[in-house]
Amino acid sequence: MKNKVAVIILAAGKGERMKSELPKVLHPVCGRPMLEFVLDTVRDLKIKDSVIVLGHKHQEVSKVLRSGIKTVIQKKVDGTASAVKIALFALGNFKGTILVLYGDIPLLRKETIAKLIKHHSANDLDATLLTANVDKPQGYGRILRDKYNTICGIVEEKDADEVQKEIKEINTGIVCFKKDKLISALKQVKPNNRKKEYYLTDTFGIIYNNKGLLDSVKVCDVDEAMGINSRIELAKANRIMQIRINEELMKEGVSIVDPASTFINFGTKIGQDTTIYPFTVIEKGVKIGKCCSVGPFVHLREDVEIADRSFVGNFLEIARSKIGSGCFAKHFCYLGDSSIGDNVNIGAGVVIANFNGKKKNPTVIKDNAFIGSDSILVAPVKIGKSAKTGAGSVVIKDVSDNTTVVGIPARPIKK
Ligand code: UD1
Ligand code: CA
Image (cartoon, protein in one colour):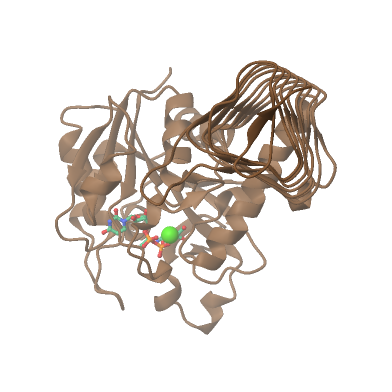
């Protein structure tokens, strides 16, 4: 029988160890708040009953939530057990399995959670924990097992003795409970620990002592289990997520010459047979067509679109711009707030001066235009179809179709 599942996501903590004004779960992993990855997993698992526990700066955090997810506020952030208690209230009469996820575990895959839920339901367990065997267990709760190798409790790092600290099997924090067993165990949780908090992890020892049925599922890829508490862990998670993003793109037919030096944000679209050269940073919302060439040393900022068969490379920054097909911008340029047609050639060193000290202004470059090396286009400005600007010109006025301008300020010349 398929058991119904409700999920509780814990995201009330401040994230002290991040030492940041930004709530921990909003810190980006590959350009996206880490909490959003957890929300994706819940969506992909098609779990309808969901509650998220927010606390620290909850208004800010709630901005990334989607509709359909219930929110409860934990006023006093005094432990994961308290957080789960509050969430259970919000679930009302729900009957079935309670899955607990933490907002700071963005690398966890939905297949792993599905495996945990399946094991829990199939064996009619009272609680099933996702554990991992790691070389460096520092910072994680350690799994305690009895002489029959059954889980009999979890001890937090701060409360562990020297022998327990040697245990390499850790608590990922991801767990399934039978709702009624969880409720009765939570009633017995006491803040008898170094942090004086109500630990959800104590429910395991309690259920064991009540003769409950406990088991665990091991996560195969230990990277998935990583909880992010510090900037060091954040950087590690970024690297792992980046590998996933790059590999996904390569599977779809994008060539990435050196994945280790290519930083592509989550949600970027790149067409088949496009090549990305080293030292390229591509931010979120960027779309690149087929058969393009990007880099080396290119920074494509948010909301850049590049159509098929265009080449952008060698020390370029492009921001908020659309570039048509068959364009070339190959040598050190800044292109900002621009709309560029098809088959446009942008010479070396071209700068679009989009900011006048007060606001950003738009630039339009029409099809087949030729922008000479070292031109400065002072926005707002329009360059007509098949128009040309001479090398070193400073363009402050619109240029008509088929016209060539030169000089400072640029003036039309007869051909
Ligand atoms: C927790 C586990 C630890 C496990 C590790 C896995 C507990 C007591 N410890 O430790 O065994 O190995 O995760 O990464 O559970 N939160 C709330 N309300 C609170 C406290 C925390 O919502 O009152 C949220 C946090 O925002 C966070 C999550 O719960 O998303 C985990 O809290 P955190 O402080 O990061 O716990 P760890 O010390 O990492
Ligand atoms: Ca954590």
